[in-house]
Image 1 (cartoon, rainbow, N blue to C red):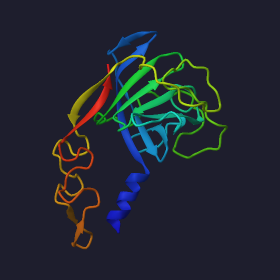
Image 2: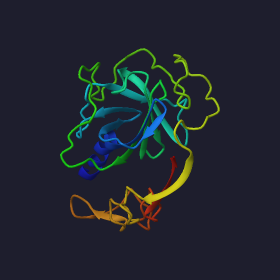
Image 3: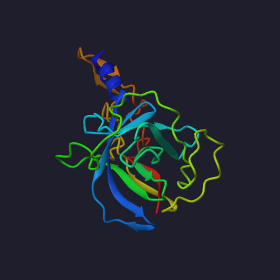
Image 4: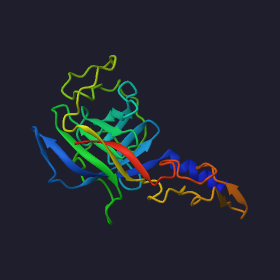
Length: 234
């Protein structure tokens, strides 16, 4: 029972750290960047937080199903300012949440990649000096979120979603396939719950079948290859 309870807690709140790797400001792309943000996911809501999942008072972002698809997960303001960049910013994650594009209405784009937080990093690098509504993960009743077309950040906001338009190329990159070490298993190809055995010892010492992998104990995220191929846009 304790094992199952632990799994439930983890799934309810997922804290990830994203490092800033590139930016596009006023049409110029630069890799001379630093810093990173903790993002906490709860269901279809996410918000900037400290490493323990406590919000930093920027507000919350909610997944916009009208603009999300098999490649992207699009989040837009739900409460408060939404995020550090304000109420008109859009969070555009890759489907596996390994990369994040913060797209602003003026066309600026900030590219973040998921990684392990630096030693001593306790909270986000960017925090507003005077915050709006709290972003501790609670859902606040607010008017419908502003909807911005994620493929064209300069589109005039409208409160009602319209049919998804034909995507135009990403403002800073072209897609190509990149194969990397699987973050779920660290490249071992084995399920990180049972270390590839397809069983583990329960609280009372009895063997329990692992619910997180197939009978061969392979990592479900990469299928046992230890590698994952994703799309990057540069």
